[in-house]
Image (cartoon, rainbow, N blue to C red; front, side, top):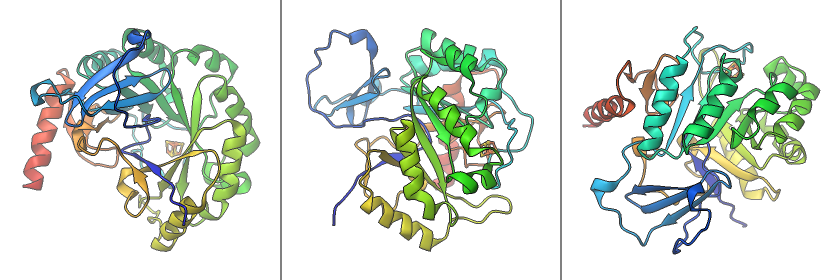
Length: 334
Ligand code: SF4
């Protein structure tokens, strides 16, 4: 049976083209590269191309390991005009202060974070969203990504975002009637938005996999590829409010589908559902809070967006809140 590797996602964020390459660095675009030290070696990242190179022959002393998580997702706002049943975002009015977010971005960038993923709620409803992306692109070396339902991206927003965003993730659960019954928005309208999104940056499609969307996965993958997407992020449904978690039978069907998929899209899956999938993770030594953290729309840092509790950052440093969070996690695990 053909074996297909699926990229492991700690979150719906940007970790494109992971590769383990033993190489010496000699690149005339050195200012486009960002370095990060960690237990696996020296990690070199280019946010423009999305290329990751792990120089695992270069041991990095622990005192020089980057302090900040490799990737951080930030829920800018909990506002959203849709009401998807599977949504796990809190239905509150929390929204982050622009100045706090820019301060955190600089701190994270300085301490080794490679990429930030904006989400929500719906991040395009954040009042200064384009300005924030532009700030992150110009004032930091972070890779800037965001996850969106896509329906607010018009030509004007696309023009504002172009050059400030490195990758976009668009939620598309199924196609046609299935999509419309879940999202309560027109599927042809989404397809029109995908044309605009394609003109901003590379993009991928996120699919919540459940008993309704699983049978349409072939068609959804074909629509995604035809629209210009390069990735398909598979998100097996988690239990939330009145919605049940995806069944074991559907997860089994998803595993078979992954094994048989021969299309052009890179397949990704979130870390919490990766068991039993043929995943490829070159950064196995960099797990937990070293790899990823989430900041919710109330300014609380957590291990993932699924966690209910964490540590408020307040007016202090992100790294101080992260230390406290690491202690809390260690105490809980002890
Ligand atoms: S579009 Fe996203 S944030 Fe909005 S309700 Fe649906 S899942 Fe939740």
